[in-house]
Amino acid sequence: GENVEQHPSTLSVQEGDSAVIKCTYSDSASNYFPWYKQELGKRPQLIIDIRSNVGEKKDQRIAVTLNKTAKHFSLHITETQPEDSAVYFCATGGTSYGKLTFGQGTILTVHP
Amino acid sequence: DTAVSQTPKYLVTQMGNDKSIKCEQNLGHDTMYWYKQDSKKFLKIMFSYNNKELIINETVPNRFSPKSPDKAHLNLHINSLELGDSAVYFCASSPSRAAYNEQFFGPGTRLTVL
Image (cartoon, rainbow over all chains, first blue to last red; front, side, top):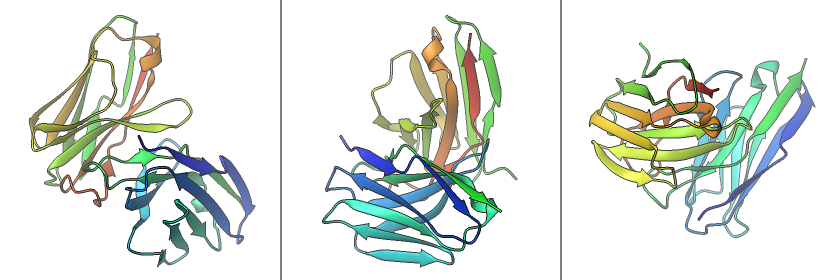
């Protein structure tokens, strides 16, 4: 089955800095790559996603890049703000209905 | 106007008991899911239903039994609860069973087995 590795497990940055979270996956058939944000005690929420026919997607301060050949994708957050502090999960899908396989999560802390 | 709701929010029970968690969505979605998030925050899919039909059934002990009376509801019944069942259980829904849909999560049910 699919295996998704996410790094780093924790990330601490100063407000205004950039943050990058990376994921690698094992199943070359995966073709959907969403990122979910989970604030403390809250539910996961989709922040951005990308399909395999696109190499990069940007939405304001967040962007996702995909390298299908190398089977890795990354989340980039620029000009970080304290409200960006949360757990971020990458996931892969596209091989079995809506089944998503999640990475282990990254705890992002943005210091004011 | 909660899109995906779950009850109860907290559930504390003794080992060996049987308990149920209920989920409802008012988004008109066809597909619903159950996820388990353990103490290390790892999110893993358990089940998925599409229009009351089971379409994803991961390697989950058969003490866990989902039931979907209609496409807006997906319940999870757990028999003979064990300590390792302690976790946050999230319900989610998506417009269809297609792979590319956003999944909308409920607020979660924190289950503690003593």
